[in-house]
Amino acid sequence: MIGRLALLLACSCAAAAEEPKFSGGDGSSCEQAVVPVAREGATMVETERHWLQKTYGQTVDVCFDVTTVFEDTIRAIEAEEEHGYPHNPSR
Image 1 (tube, rainbow, N blue to C red):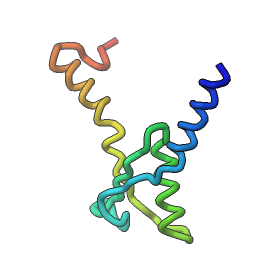
Image 2: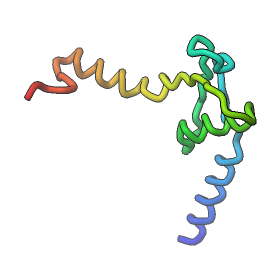
Image 3: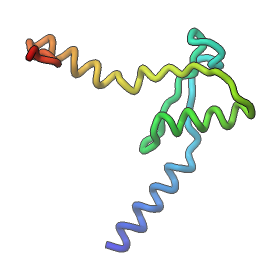
Image 4: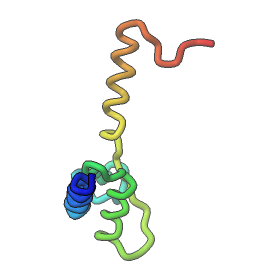
């Protein structure tokens, strides 16, 4: 059990050391939104915070495009609707 815990901690530390990745624009407008790519085990908010801390030292307004976070959910809902299973059945 102790060996497994040590391995888990080692893996967690290695994942935390990875730099998050970003695509898109500079965040200056929603047309130029920053698109964060969350690391495994990292939340989108942690990834956005990392970008902000690395990029800016003052308060700024920035747009992030987090569409990718919801893509699997959107596909699942569309598949349910396609097969006649409404996501929100009427009451």
